[in-house]
Image (cartoon, rainbow over all chains, first blue to last red; front, top):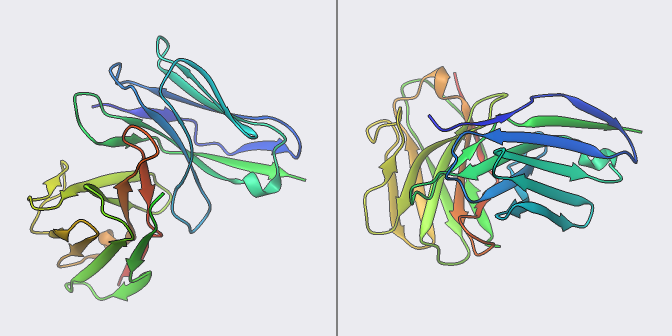
Length: 112
Length: 115
């Protein structure tokens, strides 16, 4: 059973700090990884995708991928209260499938 | 990314009845997916729906309980049949977009409560 693991949190950070969200995956063949943000009562919204080892930056968000360690992370710089949400990590199942495997999500709370 | 709508946005149903959820996309897409998100949990894939072929169901989900139609490249329906309170959940459709390999975008979801 291929899995994606996340700490459920809550992760509490002060406004303006860096929030670090982590994810590990068991499918060594996975090549594509995604971070979704889900506000309470809303559907998941794609915020980052990453396919290669290293860092990928988009505004205040940086995704990091280490395939050797099977580890994906999301850094949120200058965290704002509006970033408070559940962050879902997902990987594409290897083997030619079109399936995403989701982690349970990490709840982030940014306090003023 | 594609604009995705779902109907109904929410419903309260009696056990033993069925509900059909519609998913409409503003552009043609090959792959559509149906997920369930139970309260406080993450997303579980129910099935993958390709136009012109039978839906592919994941382990634990069967066609008799969750029949799916995919009549064209912009539309799909999911029916939740013979409902029980355990079916109370959010049902989400998603489509594979042009944002990169296997990127999926989600509709707003249908919130279902079964009494």
